[in-house]
Length: 137
Image 1 (cartoon, rainbow, N blue to C red):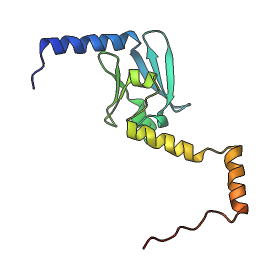
Image 2 (image 1 turned 30 degrees about the vertical axis):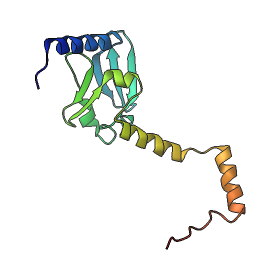
Image 3 (image 1 turned 135 degrees about the vertical axis):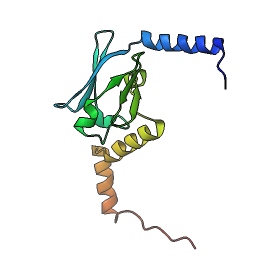
């Protein structure tokens, strides 16, 4: 599959537009806070908990401490983990694939405790709890 000059120029223009929003000039793992700290060309620093990022959530401190920045500054790579993240995605709150993000949100949502949930559970308990499932024939 050959790439035309026009497609190459279009891709370079998209990359440049992404870089204008900010790109990484430094990246490190902060052991005290267990966060990935990314320094941007805009003099802004962003710190994200490593456990929130797909591919990094189960990594050791040693594995997290070695970070490479892509030539464009739009990507971070952990060679010991063979993990990559897209900096513009991180800045938009996208910490992994759609499937992974959904699993994280689902797990967090299932743990949420609220006064409404507690009251509903108590009321349900007074009525005898959850209804029994009826076996299908």
